[in-house]
Image (cartoon, rainbow, N blue to C red; front, side):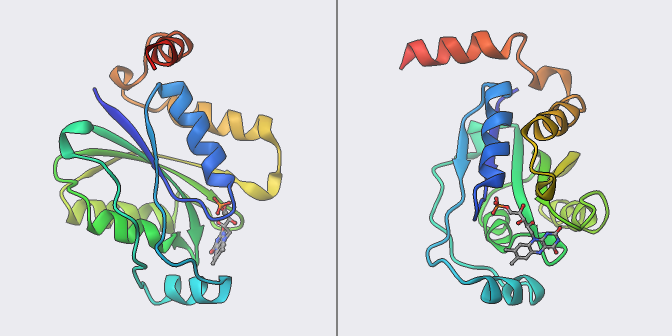
Length: 174
Ligand SMILES: Cc1cc2nc3c(=O)[nH]c(=O)nc-3n(C[C@H](O)[C@H](O)[C@H](O)COP(=O)(O)O)c2cc1C
């Protein structure tokens, strides 16, 4: 099973989580980048009104992956808007998606999960598992624990036998 990690991060929390996850899965990580960064007020409004900001194209082909791990912050109770653009511009049919949310007050297993399930269903993809980390906890050990809990729900074929060994092999190939 080919796994890829895709993340959006404005302040860096989701980036840290994405890197941890990618390392454990020995998977490549791709960052979603907006073409024009907006202020917090604009971002809040764009989240509230469901706008889609323009993003830079990611070099990702449908054959590159079977399972995509998306790491994204929650904005206004839903995944951050750059992810919406990414989902609309990516071929997702018959793919599996796992989502790890970074957040503060919103429970990622409620509205954000319902949103993801609905949107992915619309594109013919399947949401396999959801995880999350409350960034206000500000504790790297807790983040790691949330990541382990998340990965424990993955299909076994997505977990490399020994992630560290695979990672070491990947590095020596470069
Ligand atoms: C525009 C905006 C709206 C947000 N709305 C919510 C929200 O509704 N619920 C929540 O739990 N956190 C919300 N947050 C907090 C973010 O989820 C949190 O800062 C996020 O983990 C940051 O991720 P990053 O460091 O990768 O950008 C919001 C943050 C921003 C910037």
